[in-house]
Length: 380
Image 1 (cartoon, rainbow, N blue to C red):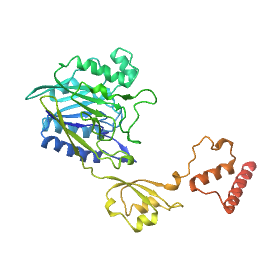
Image 2 (cartoon, rainbow, N blue to C red):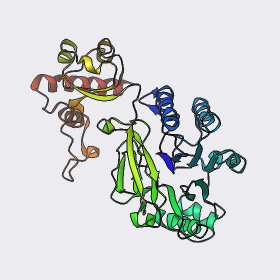
Image 3 (tube, one colour):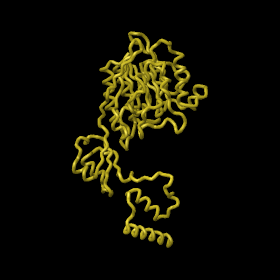
Image 4 (cartoon, rainbow, N blue to C red):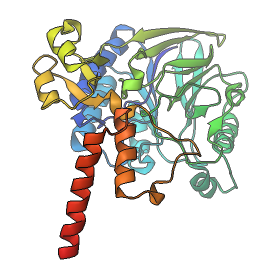
């Protein structure tokens, strides 16, 4: 059996003020073509289909169109589970009806969840949908105390394996944080604040393949336990990360072969650094069509910097100054701001931002401004 493993579409994502729906549609068009050309039996989507619990209309419309083309037009089975960004109840609406038409959606954690069974020339393949669930909510739904995310996953796996013949070929879909896996800062929402959120790779030992979602880097815990990563780059920390899907062949004996196929976005992400004059006078034409994060190294602010740079680089999403990130003192010995007067507080701020203290003329000007404000306040 052949299937595509993808996850973390995050439909409806807004990235630095940019609605990503059009960019997502371009990549999903490529995914549909790949599913057809590769003659896959199924497409597995391992959670975070939407970016938030109540997605915008455009995101819902895009998902509807993609699923229609995969299921109705191409005749592919689609197996989908909820992730931590999804509203599981909304996503799972109508799942019993849809499953009769090759679309299998698992929403909330439930003791009644059954494996999805698909057939090839060698017999059945059982797909275990291990949908995402918070430990407290899952405890209520499953009727037993579960303290960690791993407890939830192990409980779901136990329930699924009770319904699957021991010798059968088995594939898991799960939305989890695998212990030791690579995070993508500023892109992934934490599963919880504090507590045990990671899941050990040994949980998936009974399966011939585990299609994981949640972490946005395409990576593997082992040859048969893999993350496909996110559909697109959703953070400038992901600039160097390739994005794609896994094309998996499951043989009659349960052995697998995996090919990672890259996806080509409408625009790539890139980070650009330099002085305003350098970036304008020596433009990097190769980045003209990229979404950019620009870091200016100028000591002084540049008037209308973003607008003027956009004449050369039209797709700037974020602009910052390097000096604003320099000289930050987070040590315990740092002076408490609450103990500083107005002048001392401004001087500390100025030093942190500019990496130098106020000179005599600047101190004199600051003193005049403060005294003027104090006098005006007294008169009022």
